[in-house]
Length: 200
Image 1 (tube, rainbow, N blue to C red):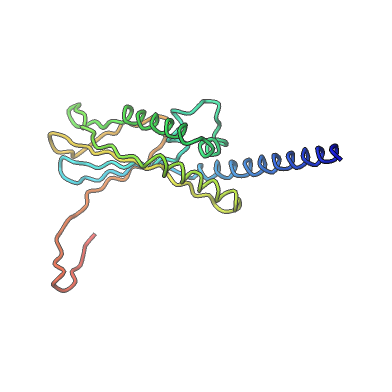
Image 2 (image 1 turned 30 degrees about the vertical axis):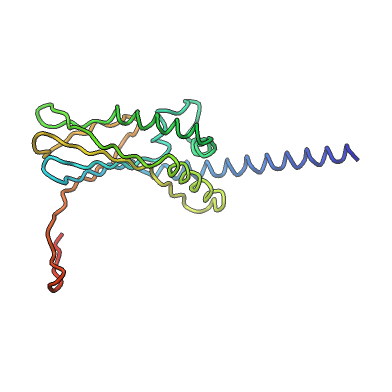
């Protein structure tokens, strides 16, 4: 009886492990394919003549790459991040923040550097939760086109003179970055009067 019970438990354990490995393999392949169509983006918005807001949108894989163990592959990075305990994830996220604060800069005219201030990062809890959610969606529906939510962070650029041009210096592992630069037009609209046309 005990021998049968032990054999049954061994079989259940083997099946559970095999199923888990298959699900993880399927999920990581899908997530890796989704990353191929993702792009790192930088949005630059000139608020005032001497003030530009910079917002970055980076896939979790690229965001954490500089602070991850080199043995972690692109196919397993999302499973690795999602399975970290809270303390380990928070530590990794803090290291990534420090890395980007040190590696990102913006050059102005006449070899001057923009002053960077008010760095804002999402909480580590929200980033981890989103990674786990993206991973879970792929486990539930592996045939669905995977959409990986980027990690978003921002910084404010200021200078003593007009910021008419800027030259970003970004981490090289990002590769190509889609930059969207804009200068919003501002005007007052009197809501007590008839509706007014807004021209783009």
